[in-house]
Each structure stands twice: as structure tokens, then as C-alpha cells.
Amino acid sequence: MYERDLARARARLQPPPPEPEPEPEPEPVRPSLAELARHFETDKWGQHRYAQHYQRHLEHLRDEPINLLEIGVGGYTDPTKGGESLRMWKAFLPRAQVFGLDLHEKSELEEDRITIFRADQSAVDSLRLVAEQIGRLDVVIDDGSHLSSHVRTSFETLFPLLDKAGIYAIEDLQTSYWPEFGGSEDPHDRGTSMALVKDLVDGLNYEEYVDPDYSPTYTDLHVTEVHAYHNLVLIQKGANSEGTRRRGILRDRYSNG
Ligand SMILES: C[S@@+](CC[C@H](N)C(=O)[O-])C[C@H]1O[C@@H](n2cnc3c(N)ncnc32)[C@H](O)[C@@H]1O
Image 1 (cartoon, rainbow, N blue to C red):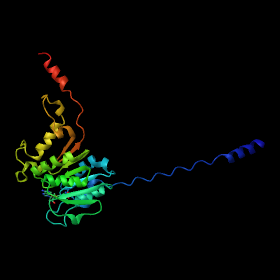
Image 2: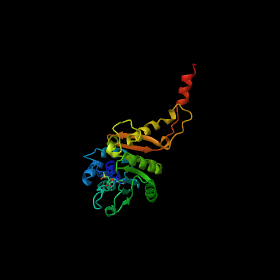
Image 3: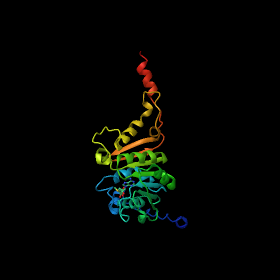
Image 4: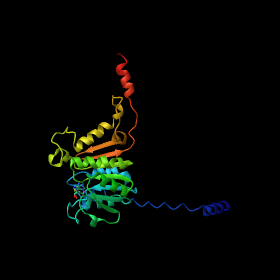
């Protein structure tokens, strides 16, 4: 009897079993960039297939307070038209400041976190001024005139001003093969926008060049990745200085006379 009472008293003294942990709220599913492109009606998804590539390369910046500049707001001479891609970037990057640059007046399209500059992407001084006003440049997208000379000037001006881990994208590179855009039907033409891209690919390996007197260019030293897709390239900035195997190869090649 005494034993049973003791067991009951012990059972009463046991702490109640812990309440099960509530199931964590499921993370809200965020729209993909392709969905946002469709929603805001930019041609980055549909007419072009760019959104999937941007998603892959910009995903890690999604919640960062970055500055993104897109050359080419859209709508051409109509001041009330365009801005579709700027609104898409604003939704995709909720902490970003989004900047647009267009040859034509587009200030009516400005809103919270969207600022638009009127400038010519082929004018070096104007580009420098815009970059200065923005401050740190994390991402630059060239979707402007698509003239090869403009694409090259914008890249040569803005890439050095990009943050040390920035990303530079160039769209609609098909125009590189079209003479009416200052491109060339000759894919090996040295003056086109695609020639610039191909030079960047060579530059990734500049440390392996045999010429001991070769002086690396700015892009040799500061481009670490070149992701080329159909009509689109994304260029990753960084320190391109992994080191070289050149000396060992040259020693082996010439050591036997
Ligand atoms: C294809 S639209 C941009 C579309 C927009 N980025 C989008 O995805 O919704 C091209 C824009 O580039 C602008 N543009 C053309 N030449 C330019 C130049 N030299 N400098 C700056 N913008 C230019 C045009 O006015 C036009 O609004």
C-alpha cells in the first residue's frame, strides 16, 4: 500500500511532458525573377531568356543593400514610357537602390528606390558623373543603344568604377554581328562588343602568357569570371591573381635544349 502511494506521489511530482515545438512558419515563396519580369512586362523574360541567368548570378545579393544601375530605361523618346525593368529590379532586390540611365528624359518614372539619370552612355564624362552621384556601384547592366562603340565605351568607363566584387552585364550581344548597330558580319572583327567579351576571356589567363614583358591590362587584373549566354554576358569583378604555371612550363619546354 505504502509502495503504491509512493509511486503515485512520485508520478505527480514528475514534470509534465514538454509541449511539442510549434512547426516553424514556412518561408514565404519569393517570386522568381522570370515571374517578376512577366509581371512588370519587361522583355528580360519572354522575348529574351535573360531572367534565369540574372537569377543565378544575383541571387546572393537579393537581400543586400546594393546599388544597381541599368543603362537604358525603355520607352525611348516618350517620357511616360519605360521603367519596366527598373520596377522588376526593385521588387527582386527589396533593399537595393535602383538607378536608371537614359538618353531621354525619364524623371516621371522615378519612385521610392528608383532614381533616373539623363545621360548618353557614349559620353565618358557623363557616365563618370552618374557613377560619382551613385557612389558604390555593385551591379551595372547595359541595355541601352546596343551600338558596339557605346557598349565598349560604357564598359571601359564604368567597369573600373564598379565595386571590387561587382557584376557587369551586357545584353543583346546579337547586335555585335549587325552592321546597323556598329557591329560586323565578321565574327572576328576587333571593334565589336563581342570582341571585347572575347578579350576578357583571354585576360582570365594572362598569367600564363609566354611573353615576360606583357603588361596586364586593368581587365586582365580585375575580371575573374565571364559568363556568356545567348546574347548576354555577365562579368564578375575580383582579383585575378591565382598565380601562374608559366615558369614551370617554360623550364620544362626549354631545359632539354
Ligand atoms: C531596350 S530599351 C531598354 C529597356 C529596359 N532596360 C527594359 O528592360 O525594360 C533601350 C533604351 O536605351 C535608351 N538609349 C538609346 N541610346 C542611348 C544612349 N546613347 N545612352 C543612353 N540610353 C540610350 C533608349 O532611349 C531606350 O529607352
